[in-house]
Every structure is written in structure tokens, then in C-alpha cells.
Image (tube, rainbow, N blue to C red; front, top):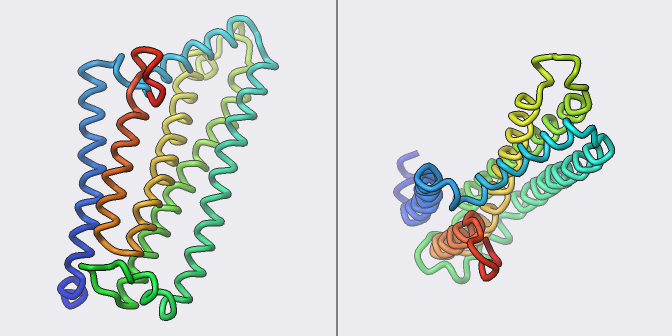
Amino acid sequence: MFDFIAAHDIDLICFALSALALIVYQVFLRWRTRRDPSSSAQDMMLIARAAWVETVMQERRDILAVQTLRNSTMAASFMASTAILLMIGVLTLSAQGANLSGTWHVLNFLGRASAEMWLFKLLMMLFDLLFAFFAFSMSVRLFHHIGYSINVPLSLGLAQTQSAQVVAQMNRAGIFYRIGMRAFFYILPLLFWLFGPLLLVGSTAALIYFFYHLDRAPRNNRDLMG
């Protein structure tokens, strides 16, 4: 264990910096959202989902509800299936570590090329994809339950199917989908890590920059990436 850490300290430090940078960004995003909710695109989506549920349940737009939930379920199912396919691809790479580790580390100026480190990197990719699959699957599960709850007439007075409960489930499904997408995007820095630890740090910085623009609520028409 300690021999592995000592032999691959550069790779492990860069991986720790990458993970820490993402955690710090999420803390910053949470702080900024609490300070100014209007600055967050995620907060805008929470409000939009709540308004959509209220409209559908009050005006009995059942067909609109079914179509929208079907699209959301299909999107989450597609991403979950893609995560599984990528996991199979990663497992295939693990069987070819002896042949590929040396070739893929041509640009590796700091890290050490070894079969053990190669397998560790692939294991991190597997964990990331498994986490994304779990998040997308939970999103599909919630969208499935919402399909029943949202069509129950409010006149029945059931506490479990009131609009506030449906809104909470809808936002939970959206949060799981967002978490799955974050984990799915993080596979890119982990992929660059196969070529070297410096590429892991650089691609993580680029990913955080992308997230920053993606999470920012558009203030005007020029904020195309908001």
C-alpha cells in the first residue's frame, strides 16, 4: 500500500487536486446560490419545474405531462445505458493494460507508467461511471413514479399526490439527473489521466470553467452558455 503511494505520488497528488477542485467548486456554487438565487441556472430550473407541475395539475394537461415525462425518462435511460456501455469499454481496456500502458504514457512527463497505476486509473473510471449509472437510474425511477402522481385529480385531496409533493419528486429527479451528468462529464478528465497526470489537472480546470458558465443563470441574450 505505502509502496504503491510512494511510487506513484505524482499521479495520486494530481488526482487528489482534481477531486478537491471539483469539491471546492461545488461548495462555491452552493454558497453563491444561497447568496444570490437568481444567479444560478439550477435555481431557475427548480422554479420552472414547480411552475410546470402546478400548470399541468391545475389545468389537467395530461397529454403534455405524459409526453414531457416520457422524454425525460428516455433521456435518463439513454445516459444510464451509455454509462454501462462505457463501463464495458473500460473493462476491455483493463485486459490490455500491459500492451497499452506504455503507449498511452508517451506524453507522461511526471507520472510513472506501471500496470498497477493503469488498473487504478481504470478503477476510478469504473467507480465514476457506476456512480453516474446509479444517479440516472434513480432519476428514471422518480420520473416513473411522477407519471402516476401527476395525473391524480387534486379534488381527491390525497396528501401524497398534492402538487407540492409532486414538485418535490420532480426536483429530486432533476437533481439526480444533474448529478449523473456531472459524473458523466468527469469521465473526460479521468480519460486524459491515462495519458498523464498533468493532463488530468488541466482537463479538470477546463471542466470547472465549463461548469461555471453552465451553472450561471443568463442575464442577457449574450449569455449563450448560461
